[in-house]
Length: 304
Image (cartoon, rainbow, N blue to C red):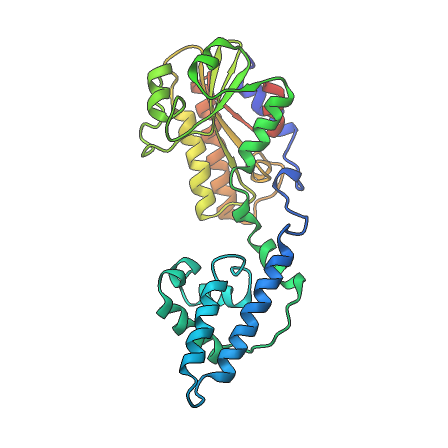
């Protein structure tokens, strides 16, 4: 096995790249025309409500228009100006679909507070989609790792029998089945999920009878939620494997790794001090528990 401190040094000499295609969504959304079509229909319906409401004997027509608006909302409406206004009202699309009266109230507010026209530039809609690109990442990091493993000849398995019978395999951790926390504890005798409120890891990898329990995080900058993520990776390094062939692996993806190991300057003194504390703790834990690893993309490729 590679020495964990030497592997970390290798990682620090091979930093993360800024434009990692695994995390980029640069193509136009495949349903952009449908988004534009629905946005246009929503705008036309809102214009009709504005023109008709308040006129004599118009209540029946207004009701019909609200029914039409309600039918337009379930799909492809979240990237319209009206869909964004719903969020600005401290509400959500799910809530207005559950409560038609809420939709009516928000519509009246929209007509009062916003300008209304029938222009629907597709680039505006794409810009709204792009702004939420981070929410689309989901399991992108996990896929990046599984693609690397498969390119190196590893095979993904879905049951423990296949895992046990082959030397170069991996499995995705899950909330149930053979690779749930409960089953992992039973199969490998490790305290998976202990003291983490049942939070699952990402991958279990087997290489030459060595078992690696891996948690992956993608971080670009420091901050509230990001601090929590780095602490979770550090916490994993504290776990002392109960078997000599078991290892816990913290995988940090993204350019925060470069800051953490001195390849980029910190924004201010507070961030610098925090980074030094995190780095010191990581190195200290690796020194105490030689079976565990802290790696980036380059380290992952070299190690497996």
